Image (cartoon, rainbow, N blue to C red; front, side, top):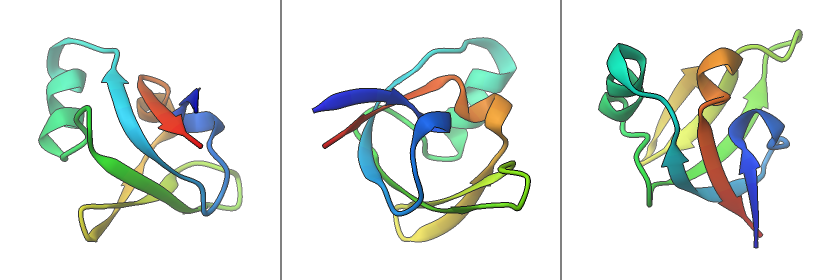
Length: 77
């Protein structure tokens, strides 16, 4: 198992969030979206310029900017 920054994940790659490395309002906003340690995520795709990234989380699709994805560590196989 490997720990990657969410920005480094490829399309159709799945993993489990291990850490959210930001505090304050941005950290709270990320956690409020359901992106907390232990949550399974899958990268569905990226926009043509690679920002934002579309994720599948808990049965719904979520888009996240790369500058937000930089703070999230994911364990992938």
